[in-house]
Amino acid sequence: MARESSRSRDRSIDRSTELLERARELIPRAAQTNSKSPAQFVQGVSPTHVERAEGCRVWDVDGNEYIDTVMGLGPNMLGHNYPAVTEAVEDQLGDGTAYSMPHSLQVDVAELIVDTVPCAEMVRFGKNGNDMTALSAKLARAHTGKDVIATQGYHGWPDVFMSAGPLNRGIPDAVGDYTESFDYNDIESLERIFEDHPDDVAAIVTTPVNLSAPEDDFLERVREIADREETLLVFDEILTGYRYALGGAQEYFDVTPDLACFAKGISNGYPLSALAGREDVMRTIEDDDFIFSMTYAGEAASLAAAKACITEQIERGDVHDHIWRQGRAIRDGYNELAEEHGVDHLTECVGMGPRPNTTFEDGDGADANLLESLFMQEAHKGGVLFAGSHLPSYSHADEDIEEMLAVYDDAMGVLAEAVESGTVESSLEGKPVGASLREQLGEED
View 1 (cartoon, rainbow, N blue to C red):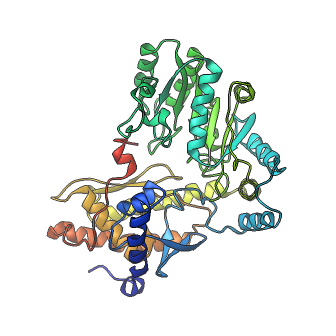
View 2: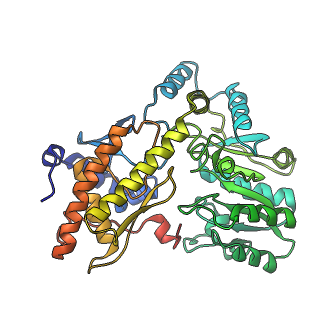
View 3: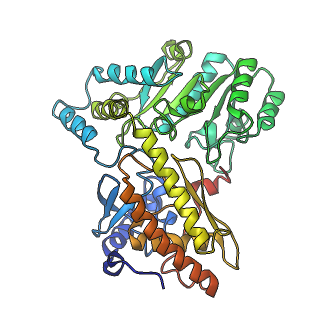
């Protein structure tokens, strides 16, 4: 029988349950982000609201402590409440945050981005990844005089991207006429877009890496197509920027786009995003008939956080090596446990070091969604805030990974026993995990 930790025995989520009931009356989906909504967790077992965080740990509103595996969906790359970043923000708060003119920090942070990102010659700031991906498409159309956007992957909810997929309700059909999708590692699917829209593709917008690494020189070939067709290449580095390397995935894979979108890795949890790219393209923003303007884009507290975050990565020097190493330890440790418990045909951890992700498959009479839900339930009861994806931080020490894997060992044992006895569904103590946003999109990494 798998062990039950003292945290599991003493655990309560009464306060979470009460807050969720209130939230459902006031907030659509009870959360501001789809991936943080209660449907993404085992309702009745998983916490629903967090109270505080420190390093790689979070405490829910009932006082339960967890090792955080997702780190706010990736922004807290150095760790929650990271001292150098917190101190920089606190210092700035004493001088204010929003002014009637630009603050000098916007120049400092822009210089840091230009110094560290291969494609960056000029920079504009926003608040969310959506701001930057939407701007990249608009800017590409304005700069090239072409209309079609070739898109791969998830780039937020702007119409230009969502018009090409199933979550397009509320978007006029005409918008979709100028958006075409292609598949990662499938160069032929990209070539077909240019065949269907000769001389009218403004940009290729792609995530530089998904769970699988690029194959057969995919990124180099995309770069060649963009050059051949006089089309702009845009990398969505919202997740990969400052995570795979100091200069992002473009530095790691040595392929330089014309424009790149950043957010999660630049300010360690504070709301800031950036579009960086070639000067001639970026200066199109200065044209009299083009507009991109946001009241809070130059808000100083987040700029102070970004300056501290990027500077810390430069000065420490080992941030990215640490993240790669801890991610590999999670991935390899998970897979060893799955094999030891005889469920490696049902679950696996895949992906590169900065972003290992667990997968579950139907088998032995069990549904993949129920398998994932049962594993999540046991991980949460054991003190690991498991949500499928892992985004390791600089604050995840070796002992944290060891503790995480010990909890996974217990959870894997419960999973294996339930599979063998045919009791996976009856072992659930709450509602199973609902469809994720990416599953709704029908997207595979």
